[in-house]
Length: 191
Length: 155
Ligand SMILES: Cc1cc2nc3c(=O)[nH]c(=O)nc-3n(C[C@H](O)[C@H](O)[C@H](O)COP(=O)(O)OP(=O)(O)OC[C@H]3O[C@@H](n4cnc5c(N)ncnc54)[C@H](O)[C@@H]3O)c2cc1C
Image (cartoon, rainbow over all chains, first blue to last red; front, side):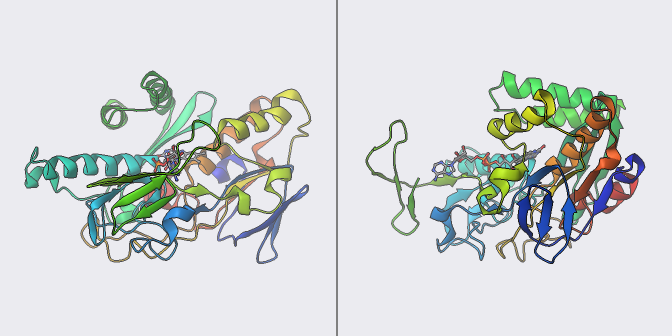
């Protein structure tokens, strides 16, 4: 996509060393000249979590695939602070939150083990604006060993993106799970 | 929350409605940790003076200023992720048969992909410039590593 648009592309880049008025300098001596430097940073663990006995070597919390902290089944962990959440995306945090809900129901005697003990199978789910009324839709679990790899681009993914945005504001950011299922249905069955 | 005692099953926290509030303690039977992560812009030298991002309203507004209120000269521009330093906490987990939780070199590249496509369109449609003014960079082998190899090829 980047190639087709003429966008330049640099991969396997080292740590960012510094930003200057003229661009970005990297730790291995490479640099990129730029007027606008649009950057996403390193995601690091919060100070109050990093030295806990349940934290990993970078301070993220270790869990099993039912989102219980290792050695402390009474602690549930979900979202970006969990070590298992890779990449750090909200879609996976959402999948983990549903698991936590089922585990709590299990412990409260409100759900049986068969239904509750469905472990995390992360799926990368992303709908990105491309401008000009178009968007891309990605749903894939291939990075984790699964078999799904879906990519759609065009005007319908853009409509999905806008619907998600409307749902986000309508639900005060508490988007229900059916939003993702609906997007999946529309992306796979309707176009 | 400021302190978590996993063995004592307590959390110490400070109410945040007004500055100066006292430390409170709670004990728990169950705890759900959902505190997100620290997005470490504060560790990028020169970011405050020279960097832009879209993680929150403050920075979104700050990016609008040169683009919509004047000052932007049309590039060149660069978009990318700093390196993510993942810990070892997902080692050995097998979410799919034969699979694993990979080591990512970028924490979250969705925004990079999206900023790139939107910026390309903006340059073409609004700024009388060209997507070729953009350099996108990634610490990964490929920018959409998490989207799967076939999707990378298809895009
Ligand atoms: C620019 C950008 C675009 C993104 N786009 C996407 C996307 O398209 N799709 C996607 O799936 N993901 C996306 N993500 C990632 C997504 O935003 C995160 O993965 C998600 O928000 C993480 O959710 P969380 O609940 O774990 O943490 P957060 O949303 O960070 O919430 C954590 C909460 O805990 C609170 N907190 C922190 N420390 C403490 C403390 N000590 N005591 C009490 N409270 C505390 C915080 O104030 C916050 O309210 C994007 C991220 C960025 C930066």
